[in-house]
Amino acid sequence: MFFHSHISMMVKQPNMTTSNAARLLVMLAALCHVAAAHASLGGDSASIEVDRLHMNVKHAAHLTPSSTGSYTVHETTLSTGTLVRQYVSRTGVVFAVSWSGPFMPNLRQLLGPHFDTMVARQAKQNHAGHRTLRQHDSDLVIESGGHPRSFAGRAYLPGALPADVTEKDIQ
Image 1 (cartoon, rainbow, N blue to C red):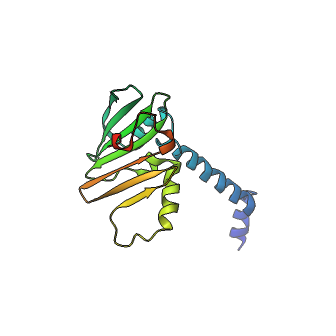
Image 2: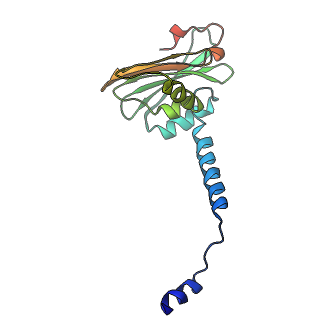
Image 3: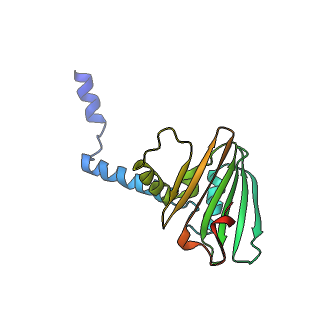
C-alpha cells in the first residue's frame, strides 16, 4: 500500500476532464476528415496528386486533353492493376472519376465528401443481393458494379460538367 501511494504521488496525473478529452477527440476526427476531404470529385486538380500518394499508384498519370479542349483526363494505374480516370475541367475542377480493373479503388479517396453522400443515400435503399450501385440524383451520379477481378464504375457531378461534355464521355 505504501508503495502504491508513493508512486501515485511521484507521477503527476494529467488534468484533463472528460469533456476536454471528448473535445480533443472530436477535433482529431475533424482534422482527419478534412485531410480525407481532399479527394478528387469536386476538388481541384491539385487533389489528383494527393490521390496518387494515398492510392499507391503504379504508373504516373497519362494526361489526355479532350478534342474540344474543355477538359483533361488524368489516367493512373494503381498497383492493383485498376485504371482510374479523373476528368478535370479547364477551370481545374475534377467533375468526374471512373475506374475499371481487378480491384475496387479507394472510393472514399476518389469521391471525397461525396462518399458520405453515397453511403447515406445507399442506406435508404434496399440493395439485398445486388452487385451494382446506381444513384442518379441531380447533384451526384454514381454507377458501380462488377465481381472479383472485374470492377468498373464512374461518378460525376452533373452541375459541374463542362457545356460540351455528356455522360457518355465519362468512361
